[in-house]
Length: 324
Image (cartoon, rainbow, N blue to C red; front, side):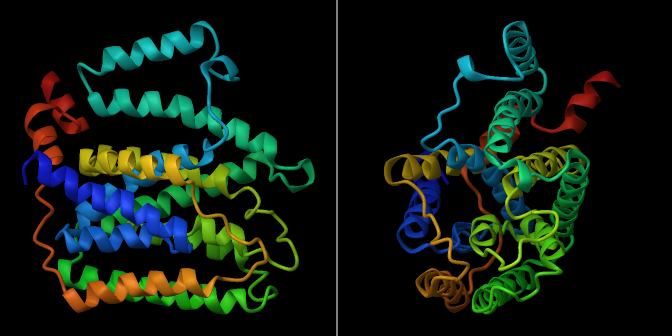
């Protein structure tokens, strides 16, 4: 693909995927997954693009209406902020991915602090418990990304679509009774990080809308953004270090998704603990379209990833080779 066709493809996936999700409540990550399959993306490409997309788009979603300003930073203030920016700029000429992740980490840490302050004191989980959840979530997500390196494309497509349909059925079932699986709710939430790494499925918005009748003991649902954001970031970082995965196309898709969110906002659930049949219906429809088209996953050959691989180093292995 040349520059124009690559932009058009990523615009269709990122912008219109978020627009459909905004209007219907459909799971945007499943819509994007289906869009990438339509473009013939391989399992590794899907996992890499979605991992990159999810990290950056969380920054967009959680700052919608609550803009982060350097003046209001609580951790990176004064000389600490300028030192971090200076290191990021210096690293840009040696290890672009490291520079980008360091700069992103500044905003994600500040965002996490701000989100944590919004959680009522009685509902906050202890820092030690939160760290354990983050380690589990990031490990499961990284493991899911690792699996994409060995799964055959055809099996991956059918497994992903089957899981998407089963998850829609699960959320419909769990939404019909707010007492179902109360005791196992935290374990269920954590297990979904494996699906996030494997297929790029992010169910955090749906999960936060599925309020249980009895609040779980650790209040993970109420603190979910504080676990999701660092888990996604760590998994993205580790996947680059281990598997050299960092598609620039994921960032371009974020730009179009962010444009849609800034223009039209994002879908907010009813908070009643029940799933919207419209949201489920449009999500299922997207999956069915993939099955009907049956795309061949031979690779998403786009301008941005080709340019990055030929002009800039975004992998740690290529940086370490400079010292041998």
